[in-house]
Length: 373
Image (tube, rainbow, N blue to C red; front, side, top):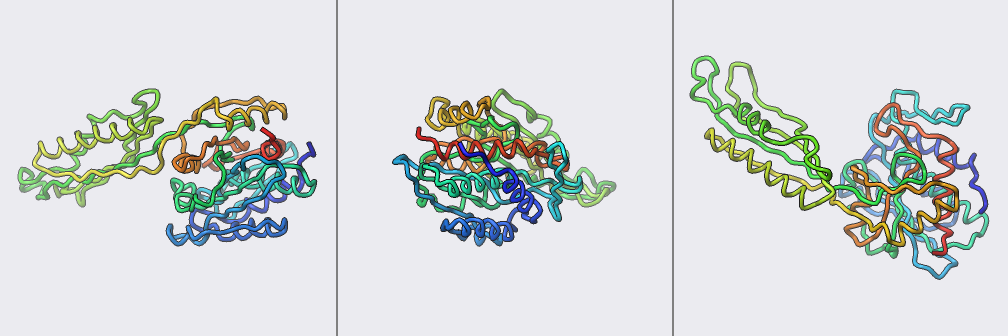
C-alpha cells in the first residue's frame, strides 16, 4: 500500500485546527473542506442544516464511485470543536507531539478524523488505487448532541455500513456501543412568603427539591446506567421563602429502556415530594441521542479488524459512554463503529495528538477504502 503523505496530512490538520469552528459557526472550515474536494474534482453537497440549528453552515456530503463491485462504505467526522476554541494554535514538537498553547483546546476532536479521511482520499486519487465506492459525511454541531447530523437527509446515503472517525485513544481502538443520553428538568412551584414574619405561610421549593434529590440515586446505578443531578437553582432573596426551584440532570445508559425507566422513577420521586408539601412540579426530559450496539460478528467489525491486522495495529473493541453521530446513523439503519483517531484528553486545554498516530489514522481510513471484503 502506498504510504500516506505525512507532511500534507499535517499541513491540512494544522490549517483546520487553526481555523475557528465552534458549534453552529463552522462556515470557514466548511468552505475550506469544500475547496479540498473541489481540487480533487469530487462534487460535494452542503445541506441546509444550519438553518434549522441557528448555525452558519450545513453538513457536507460526497459520493465517490469505486472500481470494485462492492457496496459503498460511509466515512464520517464532524467539523465543530468545543470551547474554548477561539484563535487556536497548533504547536508541533520535535518529538511528534501536537498540542495547543494551553489557552484553548487543540481541536483534534475532530479535525484528526476530518484530516485522516481527506488525506486517505487524496492518496487514493493520486495513485489511481482500485477502491470500493465511498461516501463522505462531515457534520456540523456534533458537540451539541449531534444536532447537525440529525438534520441530514439520510435518503441520500447508499451505504449500510459506516466508520465514524471520532473516538479518543490509540488508533486500532473502536467503539461498538454507546448510550442513550437523556437530560431532564424539574420546575418545583411552592409559595413565597416573608421568611422572618410569616415563614409558615410559605411553601419552600428549595427544601422540596433537596428532599427529592436525597432520594434519587446518583452516580453508577448499574453496569449500564449513570444518573447525575447537575444543577439546582432557586430563590430570589435571603428573606423570602423561595416559591420556585429548578433542578436539572442527566441519565446515560447502554439500554434505552433503562434510561427511560430511570427517568420515570426520578419524575415520580420529585412529584411525590412536591405534592406532599402542597407544591407542584413540572418534570420533562429530552432524549439527546439513543443507544446503539453493533454486533461484534458484523462485517463492519470484521473489516475493521482485518484492516488493523494488515497495518500491524492491535484491534480493540470497546463500549463508549459518550455519544457521536453514529448514534443517529444507527437509528437510520446504518451499521457503524466509532474509530479512534489518536486524540487524547479531549474537551480540555491539555488535548493532544501525535504526528505518527495521525498518519496511522489516515492509513486506517485508506485501508478500509481499499478493502475488498
